[in-house]
Length: 202
Image (cartoon, rainbow, N blue to C red; front, side):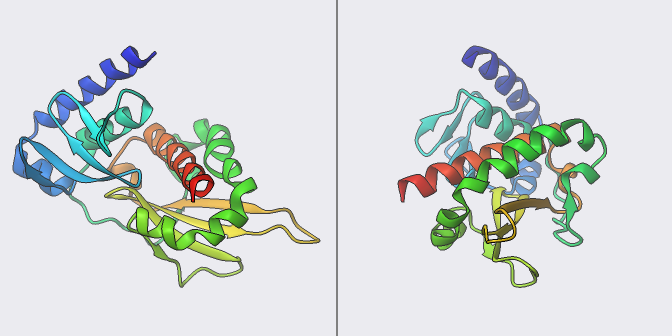
């Protein structure tokens, strides 16, 4: 399975590196040096090489590597339009992935809502995000950047006597300009996995 992911990743890397270097540097955006691009991805320090991806000093051979390479091959240099926010199902083709998105990107976080609230400052810092001061009718809310042009806007509510805990994940209105819709769902899923990993390690 890892070999399949690596083959897919390398295909996207070839497409990404076929772009002019200055164009790719601006689109990611990233810093080019030492034969690779440097930027933040999934809360870690990423190096995008022509034939491999290194995240926090580890070579990527799984889905996260594929997503980073996919992003690098598709991303444009458009400004991120965080407002108006868009639900995943509102993107063209999103309904086909809605069930998996809800399960893997939102419901997966529900058991950890209280831990996420306790550690939200660390999570925000790790993902270069910010609290959402405009959020209403929620216990807390923040935006984190899974990839430089892919912000995820989260709305959290703790469980109470009347309602169970809930998590909502929203996107910039033009998020599908930077990665295909299927990749957008997977990005949210692996961001959720990383957040869960972080709150269980803190």
